[in-house]
Image (cartoon, rainbow, N blue to C red; front, side):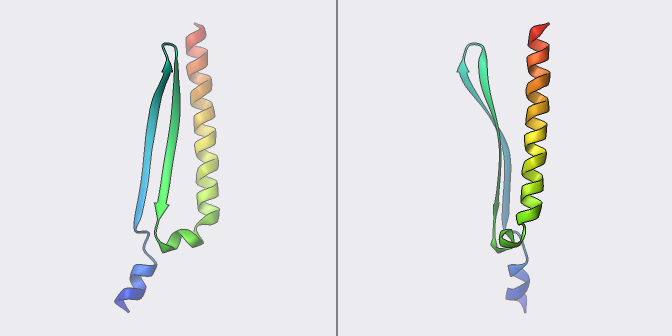
Length: 71
């Protein structure tokens, strides 16, 4: 039974941000999240919702930075 309980664990998850300088005035922001383990097969809906939230956050961050550069 101990082996079965390991099946329901998410073995690993990474979440990180990357800032990539493109030139003197431009930086690419990337947000990366990776899930590993057998439970990922059953997390499709949650992962899609999480991805949507990241896109919304990234868009809001982009708008805020662009607006502050206009001042």
